Image 1 (cartoon, rainbow, N blue to C red):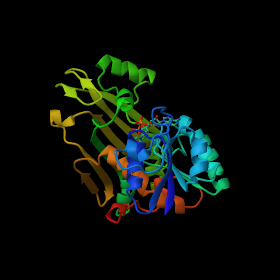
Image 2 (image 1 turned 90 degrees about the vertical axis):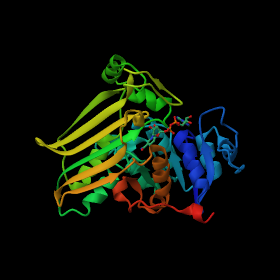
Image 3 (image 1 turned 120 degrees about the vertical axis):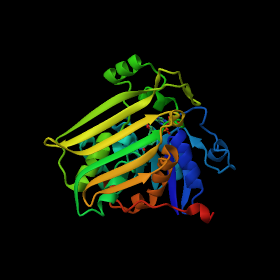
Image 4 (image 1 turned 180 degrees about the horizontal axis):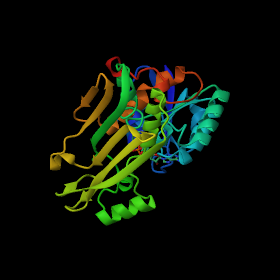
Length: 339
Ligand code: NAD
């Protein structure tokens, strides 16, 4: 039985908490979130379940000291600059970390200094750090690498994740520019307030490292997906002519040759304009291989599942900062059948 704590009880963190509670091999022992309206409340009650005896603690270090976890899942933010100190403070307590921060999925090339610092810290404290999630962490990297395992040779990799953004909250709507005008979208891209997908570089470097390829440059393009119809979710209203999402693409080159091409058009309510969602991988090589998952792996459930399912592998792994390609093949923890 592994003792698990959570840092961040938002859309993903609360889903991970619910999933951990359902697992026979995992025990939820502590939760920290900075939201004052959560502090002191029972996690079970907040999830609409029975009281579970774990209350949201407003102080992360106090939460870790009092709950003595084997691993903390950090679900607070996307960026290395923000989560680095959170990860380091957990590692210094001798506790393993899984984070769903996109930039931590493979930070070795994008953030080499921070990655080295965290790796050395983890080794010194004998614990493991993993960044993961549905994407980056699974669809456009781990799954791609796994598929190449059945290829005699690989010349080029192309993959696409065409997904529905509707379940996501205001933060994601803002970073994707959903609900804005075309002009505001373009201004947001130029000033960095609209970023599209976070994680292409991490996925590309994870794949390239697995293939033994050295990437010379990555080109990215972000285009607004303009809606022809009214699209409404719990968090956003998109009038016809406004932005329903971001079509973000990335191409990675070795010399002049494009060897990895990733596409990730994300939008709210794609079905209103008959856009089929799905996850697709095409390997050009010997033989050519393709994989299609229709509709796409849902972003929320997928992230919650991957973050939870990797817990045993991370606790049992060698110390250091790892990525998904360093660990055993992901597999479901089917705890709910037994509890
Ligand atoms: P969210 O906004 O719903 O939740 C974040 C929670 O963290 C909130 O409850 C907030 O109060 C808390 N929080 C933020 N900073 C904190 C801090 N310093 N200390 C304590 N609590 C803090 O977001 P979410 O949808 O749960 O996603 C969390 C992060 O994970 C986002 O950055 C998102 O982009 C990322 N994410 C990654 C993947 C992936 O595939 N890798 C998938 C989904 C989400």
